[in-house]
Length: 510
Image 1 (cartoon, rainbow, N blue to C red):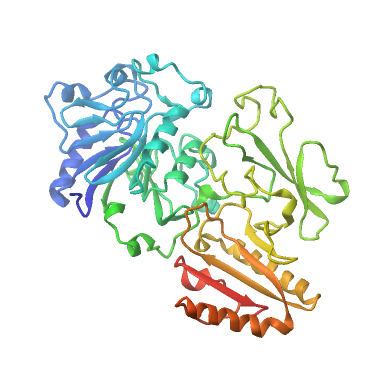
Image 2 (image 1 turned 90 degrees about the horizontal axis):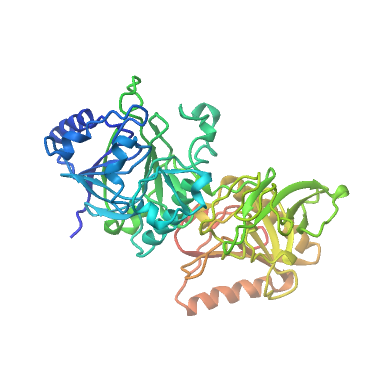
């Protein structure tokens, strides 16, 4: 049976300095253990430049790791990469020292651990290396098939991923940070550090913990919410062995309970400093590219704010909508046929930003980035939210308010989204009042087997029927064994009950 909790030590780039790392791990284990295992991210077996390494004494059996040790491979020197050539899917290279493999999910001490070795290299990501070559020679980059294999393995059960191990950070980690809070990343400017593909993996798997290395610094991101899971994720970047700055520590001790052993209330617990997911932030405040059709070659949609007076619809424009009556609009432009933004053809080899073709919320018809969005129903697009007519309206003027980006639970709405929802609510109330009606608004958070995108529905109700409608709702609820509670005025239900299941009705501004 799985343990209630596992004690794990996680190491950053060891660069072949196994003796020092294991000596320190052994000391910690004796003082604060027992620990169950050591996990290593980054380049583990050798110094990528000099090839210096302690590995030979472990392979020969002269030395042994103090705890079962599992490692990712990074930019290994050719003097040690040969140890990995014949075991692309992982294996033991010395007693107690195991290479996890290219990508996949492993259960270690009761924890489900997702992992991917190597680095994201745009040159190789889509260019599939023949399997016969990959089976005989270690490569320091990962390819799209490795990512898809990880995602497939991670979603074979509903137990979730406890720990995600990657060499690189997820690019975009900084999106909710203030400039003074950026980490001292070394290999690149902080806002360029990491990989967009790793960000996609972290967003898709929603692990409880995500460990990475490579940037030669220790950094803990504030816990962030996940749109597709109730628990939060903690991203922790580890420094490298031999760093003279002792603050950039390369070793981290973790006491983690498996998700499958956690009660629902434990999973839902959020620390006070919890933030939104930085990777799930689709900004419509500046021109950007949003991934489109997830089948076949990746399509791109360009989102751009333009002046209505100069708006000229081209054959590639998908939709142009009024932006809050401010004389401006958002223009969605699909790519011209047969050619991308740059000079390349096929497989996205133009000059434009490469967007990884990974599973996204493309099956959600409420996401503006989705090819399934019903553009002719869109009424208005704001900075954070938009208004659309209902696809199967109950009456005329049956309207919906929705966030632009995918938010699957009401508790996942940002302050900016909540603020703009309230602005739209007030505007609709004024509109309905101008026609002699009151606004009936309802929102809900209920279990669903389908993709869930937060939305608020509004209907006009003739003022003379409001009392009858309210009484009818209350009576119908009683027949179903339900009881309505009065909520504070001016708040969304999610602000009162969090992510608990609910349905809320409101008439007018009440």
